[in-house]
Length: 526
Image (cartoon, rainbow, N blue to C red; front, top):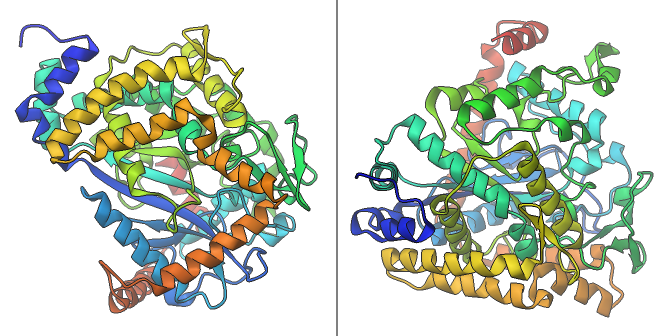
């Protein structure tokens, strides 16, 4: 190739070329779905991780997040969304069969929680790595409180195939595919995602209301209104999970993570891990012989960085994520801006896969200039505006510092996504991608069709509490999932996975040959 095509239309034409489009059915996805275990009365379960589910430290598909009561279900990378949904359904069925009367909470914002002390921190056993995972969570509790960590989300993992990169980079950039050029292209995608990711909470945000117990004793500037016996809401909110109440960290607001290149990203994240925090120095040292956090820096470890998207490379045992990125480049991206979908028994619907495939492919194909600090801040401000006020007809976002309505900005984005959807339809011999785009466009045309509006309308119509809605759905989904037949896995396979995970945890505990203090010192020095 003599010249690099710069315009969107030129790049779409390249995507549609037979050699490139033939690789598009190889796009892979995996899902990480978080959900709280709750008691029959709707309160948070206080029981340990069910032993029949295996060891949370080492199980392939079933683990815990912050709390012993906060489950996380993980599916492996697959090309077929049908298969992923079936895997996720099987995991839910298996878990529910070993939980007695407990149920799974179907909303992002937590059920009724009676204070931080009633949110048990996850226990990963007595190995050094298990103790480190628990101590990291102790640090999170001390820094942000446990309630914030009990929020649930869905992470969507997405990757193009090696074959795609070989032909796409040759056609679009006249470059050979290697870890550096692939990482460069993924970071271009990530920058565009940051520019447009306000769309995700607008279209899929499903947390406009929450139980008042969540903010008990906390200061908030948000003008909440009351609902039912103890719920609070914002009339135009889309995703309170993504607001200042949820996954944010004021200490991180000055970090200015750079998404221009893999090296600048790695350096800015590593800097945060090494930057001491005056605020967190309060938790230094030990109390009664126990550490209170991993360290007193702005980030204890890289996982503490709150971001609506992460470039990822699978890590080896004890390898830090930035070391994996530096060594082997970007392997996939993790979309972290999705609320749990309360209209699905497994927290995500198949149509979301098709739309996200279109959206993320659009983010790759659309030209993506490097981002200044001011432009990065603009993306943060737009996301914050939409999560709290996204359905307000008066809302204006900033596009290159110019005010613009959601409908005005979404119009040309959707026009471009329709072109991407056609290419994906043709490559996969279906019309599911176009259908998913048109389904989401209806929410742009009419905000009352967004999940947040549908939920709030239901709550307000019956003066119903968020907790009541959660309980109704939890009971319905428990019955539905228990009655479903296994489709990919079986009871015996899950039993074998659980047994293997317990043996693997025991092996880790027996293999330790240094003290925990020495282990931590070695980990952070390496």
